[in-house]
Image (cartoon, rainbow, N blue to C red; front, top):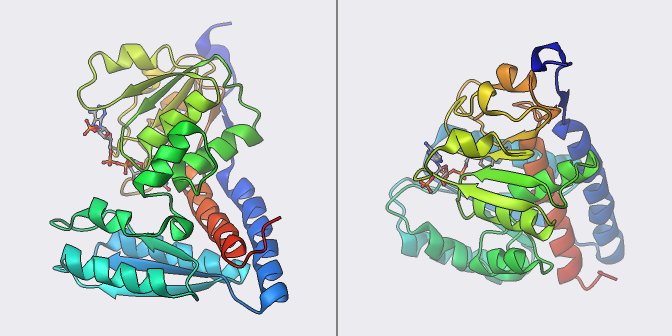
Length: 289
Ligand SMILES: NC(=O)c1ccc[n+]([C@@H]2O[C@H](COP(=O)([O-])OP(=O)(O)OC[C@H]3O[C@@H](n4cnc5c(N)ncnc54)[C@H](OP(=O)(O)O)[C@@H]3O)[C@@H](O)[C@H]2O)c1
């Protein structure tokens, strides 16, 4: 059968799975409350006035509400220095009523975002941004992991995508997405190729990928013709106008499974953040089995 004759790819429904993850988080929140009277609390630090970041923060706070979690928002003006941001993080780190700390990225330059992230104590690093979290991910040790790749792994698991021995290609090597994604796939026994802006003959590499993760930040960057027939395609992109990093319609005609944008990776990222905050609370309250 030619590629043109086959059915369109099945959609990986991130919204549906996110609802299940959030239901689990709501149970953990109730457990913390019933046992101790403490309400799990996520503190978010938002620096500057980037409208996309403001939207993400609103969506995360809404999900906190839905599961009964408290959310605290610290808004800092553009022009905040690294020292000022670090001081705010130190206050939250010392506050026993705050169980998780999220510094919304990207933080505006010239703030040293790594210095800010590293200030988050590991037990409250529910977004998995510290070097300790990344190190643990690489080694396959338990950790609060970067939420986007962790959400993607949950999605792949839910749809029983075979990873053992397959060729997986990740485009993008950021510390919050591409790098931990590659490590998680290696730990699941995939054979991983990690591509970035210096990669040569990218389309040829993608053509061999049984599983493709696009985390580039460029609208419709991955062309449909690059997709291996029957591949699994995960599109992390969330560009203006709800456009992903993959040319969705063309890729859907070749892939077996594909994430929609929106409704794929995004909801799983937020649900994972909320779930990890619930876990962090239980750990801090001494309620983990
Ligand atoms: N849905 C969600 O929940 C969620 C969460 C986080 C991110 N995202 C999205 O995921 C995407 C990636 O995010 P990020 O934070 O990882 O972005 P990032 O830090 O800007 O990293 C982008 C990566 O893409 C690579 N790249 C850029 N141009 C390329 C090219 N022409 N060929 C190959 N690689 C290229 C870069 O390579 P170099 O390292 O060589 O510069 C870099 O590693 C964005 O669309 C973002 O909006 C979505």
